[in-house]
Image (tube, rainbow, N blue to C red; front, side):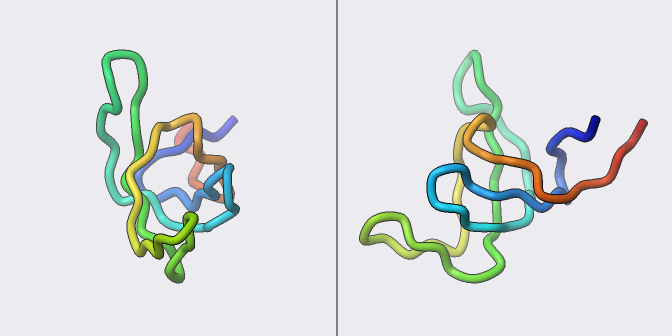
Length: 68
């Protein structure tokens, strides 16, 4: 089973925007988070974003390498 790592292609669960994970960080003491650069600007409400940092459970793996 693959997991999300730096270099993985991911999709944001709320709006389907697809991007590449460029960094991993911590969201809080319980959750990790990913910095994602979108393939094309993504629209979240009235904001248009090229990058987004969001909690790890809000991303879904599209493609990644299996390091096992």
